[in-house]
Image (cartoon, rainbow, N blue to C red; front, side, top):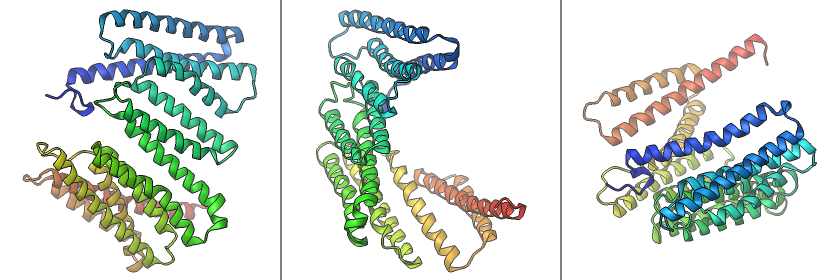
Length: 396
């Protein structure tokens, strides 16, 4: 049995990993919550020196565990206790900076707190590289860029795209150093952050730059290309050089987002939206079929489809629901009572599929899709009903 992959661990290793993460998470959040809940009862010196003492004690314990584990384990082995303690140290550094700023009213912006916190994590990340510390570093760095962009300059999103791309490359090249060669968590997270930064950059440039320089067609085309080209590059790399099915899914989702940017500028009438929705649905289904073939080619012994395929199925379902719903209500002139009837019918179809004794994996997925569509219709019905109720009661 393969016990190296994140989704192929034995239940013993799952429990060890789960309880370790819970312990570290509860310990760090408990310390911060304890200080925040009793902040008014401590003097300024007690707040600062108490947290500093806890920080020093944690560093000393981390060094002690590092020396002890280094003698017992090989150099390439992951030292759980050491890395867990220094992860707590990285969290306490941020809490200490926040406490100093609040106590002495330094007047610094919030983004400066996260920026300094990120820089102070860097030595620990270089000395004790691991997945959790890298994720914390990436989280604080991206929050700093986001807050700086919100308060000062929209150009900071360019740096966010650049630094997340650098993180992505580093996580791929040094996966063994970060003890991520089996799970590959960091490349997935950094790829999502890179595309999220690209979406933010596209929206900002669409507002501040392209709206004044380009026409509608040029603006939408350039905005979509800023996302479409990187998504195609990522898809090619993870299909050609290192097969990563989840990263392929992320690339396809980003390409669909670029398509939405491009298509939103062409919707001038009801028929345009239907055509673009139909094209998006067909493309999503074709992408799913292609990805399933790629997955079976790379893993011929695995008879089940990958769980990440459901992400694209949900997106295809949402496109279908929006497109079909718009056609039903605008073309046929249906009212809210019709949505209730359609929702009940779809619930009946889904329920009959679940009761089928000869059901397989695809039947289960289809039943779930019908349940989701039925909930969408019923949700729309309740939304209209409650909105009418509020109008009658005079809340509008």
